[in-house]
Image (cartoon, rainbow, N blue to C red):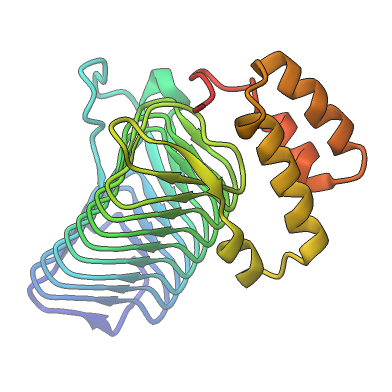
Length: 262
C-alpha cells in the first residue's frame, strides 16, 4: 500500500490494497484485499470496499457506500469476479455496486463521469457507459447494459439482461422490461413504454436540428407508424443511409437478449 496522507485513523485498510496518491479515506471505512483506488479519489465515512475491485482517479465516493460486494445471485458460488470503476464518478450515499459472476462475464464495469445518486443499486455483470445520471433509488438488475449519457429518473428499475441505448431518458418510477433504443424517452405507465425522443437531452449535448429531425423520423417509423417491427426495420434502413444516428439505432435493434420495448 502506497503512503496516503488522508486515511483516517479509524479506517481499516488491508495491507494488500493499493491506494494511490492523494487518496482520502474517511472514518470507519473498510478497504479489503484486492482493492485498488486511483489517485485523488475521496472515500467518505462508513464505506465498505471489497475486492477484486479497481477504482480509477478523482472519484468522489460519499458515506455508507458498499462497493464490490458479492453478486446477489443464487448461481454465484464464490468464483473469481471483479468490479471496475472508471474516473471522475460521483457515487452518493448508500449506493451498492456488486462484482460480476463467472457465468456473466466475470466483471461489472462502470465508465467515467457518471453520477450515481443516493441508494442507487448496480447489480452483477452490468455495463454502464460514460456521463450517465442515475437518480435516487434507480436500480439495475443483473447483466444490464447502459450506453453513454443515459438518465434514469428516481425509482426507475431495469429488468435483467435489458439494454438501454445512448442518450435515452428513463422517467421517474419507470419499470423497463425490454431494450430501449438510443435517444428514446420512456415514461411510467404499468410496464413502461416509449413516449417520444429525448429531444431536450440531445439539444444539451450539441445535437443540431438536422440530427434531431432524423432521429424523430426514425422514432415515428418505429413507434408511431403502426408498422410491424420487420417493416419498421426496412424503413430505418432507408433513413440510415443519410444518418449515422439512425444507423446506430438500427444496429441496436434486435441484437439483445430481451425484446425491444414497444
